[in-house]
Length: 192
Image (cartoon, rainbow, N blue to C red):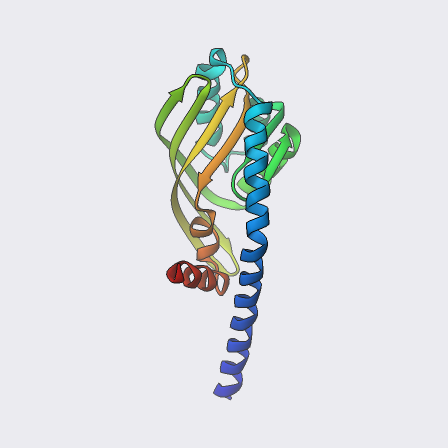
């Protein structure tokens, strides 16, 4: 009886390891594409210093609590209609798709707090260092995640975000908490 369970577990573990290795191999191409899209966005979406103050106020308000019932509306007010957004998981180029995504994300969380720890400005580029903490339930487990990250932002003259590139470890913050997948992620990190 025990042997059957152990065999099934080892087979499942092998499948996860193979799938993870395949994702990592494909991830190289995805990373290259993501890097090129970000570099192109730097050209396509120049910022405007006049919108920074207003934009930062909106950014802090919108991201303070992703579970807020009005999160989709806050995101629609924060971002320009045409934009570049990449949070290391998804990339968006239009406000409506991004607002919908953030609404679904917020609805899937039990709680969410993002605090702004530092803001650095370099002409029309703004870098926001933040701490994110959220609670949710996935794969039958309670997940309590704390992570740090940096967002590179550019605003238009109206204070709307036209470029938003996150730099954070989504693998550690999200996937490492899931059974089996988390084991594979933690194992791969340990090997590196």
